[in-house]
Amino acid sequence: MSAIRPAARKTLDQLRSQRWFANEEIRGFAHRQRMQQQGFSREAFLGRPCIGILNTWSELSPCHAHLRERAESVKRGILQAGGFPFELPAMSLGEVMVKPTTMIYRNFLAMEAEELMRSLPLDGVVLMGGCDKTTPGLIMGALSMDIPCIYLPAGPLLDDRYRGEAVGAGTHTKKFWAEYAIGNIGHDEWVRLEGRMARSPGTCNTMGTASTMTAIAEALGLSLPGAMAIPAVDSAHPRMAWACGQRIVDMVWEDLKPSRFITRASFQNAIVAYMALGGSTNAAVHLPAMAGRAGIALGLDDLDAVARAVPVIVDLYPSGKHLMEDFYYAGGLPSVLKQVRGHLDLSALTVTGRTLGEEIDAWPDADEGPSAQAAPTIRTCEQPLIAATSDCPEAGMALAVLHGNLCPDGAVIKPSAANPKLLRHTGRALVFDSNEEMLAAVDDPDLDADENTVLVLRNAGPVGGPGMPEWGNLPIPKKLLRQGVRDMVRISDGRMSGTHYGTCILHVAPESAVGGPLALLRTGDQVRLDIGERRLDMLVPEAELAARRQAWTPPQQPYQRGYTRIYQAEVTQADQGCDFRSLAGTAPTPEPPIF
Ligand code: FES
Ligand code: MG
Image 1: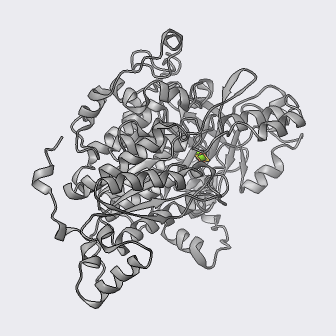
Image 2: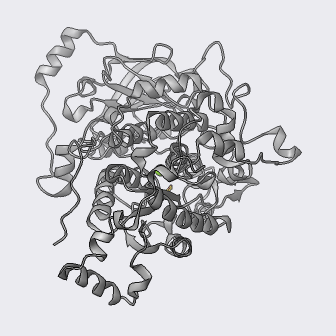
Image 3: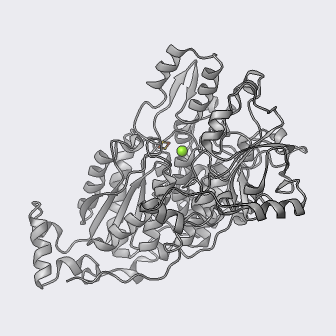
């Protein structure tokens, strides 16, 4: 739709790249000269929108292995639309390889993306990411910079088959590891599995953090319709990359920058998508951070309210049983949005210049044939994935936000990936002060724990971790695994991988390392989870807690310099999105002077 085009259409001299290249001073000469140094004729780039392609490709980011090649498709699109492309490397956050956790570097990537856009002659950008933190990182930077941008998701990797079942990376690894630990999978088979399950480039093929965040990007209106579900190695993927290149050039002329279409309604739509998909708990950290960059205050209670209204309707791991390839065949995100359209603000604009409502109306219905009708990947709100029961009305929800004397500023749990029987539970706490301590103790045959024990890990928060590592899916003690126990109530101030499942209470805020009440809990205390009341409490008298608070001292931090020290000093708590205090907000930053 061209409703916004005539009013805002830019002229050539209004493009920011013109300040660099159309400058008749000595600096302009140097800028053009250095482009010619690369073999770019002045006719090739002068007088055209200059488009950055922020590429998070790296050989230590297997999920993005194809993005270098994909950038060529983007470039073709840009050139054919009359723009000129510049591919730029940006920090590559491959979830599996980066230690201690990619989360600590999300803000680093956001900062890098923003400053690349600001410091260079760019009129618009195509953001190439997909592996977990790359999506929020790139988008946070782009929202802060506020020049036209479009998000190109890496797309999911292909499915594998094992013992007749479709299997994917992430969720199944943990499942098979538990079977290997108790001898149900032998060593040779375990080694064979290593060469399988991740059989193409692309992001984890479950509804883990990657798919959740790329779906959120699409629901926000920052990707082309249907983009996030396209498998990374499908021919449709380079075609979509080409279309991103085409579209970004028009967006520059239309001055369609995020502040002109990303509103509270866009975020509300993103939350609806998140809940309908049964998305990763990690989104509960990234959404407030992303919204903060657009000047929109979004809290955990905003997420809880949508989770109560919108059930999980998508049958994908870890809440369900399908994988992302099936999701693609079922029509991808626009087909989900059609099912929850009553909860959406259909007037929200997208990068296409059309509204979300127009885009989903134009989206063809998928025809998966009779076999899919028996077990559809995308269901309806009337027949959600997990039916609410009178015992547990929350069983089908993607998220519940808890408060209580253990988490005054909030904590989250994903009921749809938990055992409904454990969602109302009182048990004795077994507390670990560090991940190392927990790992050293958890498989001890004499561990003082049974199936009712509440396993607790602290010092895993934004400051304590540091960076909130994904330690929140504490392993079930081996001795209990042997007894057939597969789930227990677990609590931490860390996060959990979006591909994992279990009754895990995460993101406890404030965290223990800054003196949150989790720091006061002791082994042997009773802890009560009541999902109906959205409460998490330790049943310890207030006078006793006051005495413990008096005696508490903060843990020693070994980071006396460097990025981690900056991170610990700047990071906000999980309920606020773990952004840096000095990066949040929308205070205008001046354009760099050109000397
Ligand atoms: Fe990259 Fe899962 S490891 S998306
Ligand atoms: Mg992950």
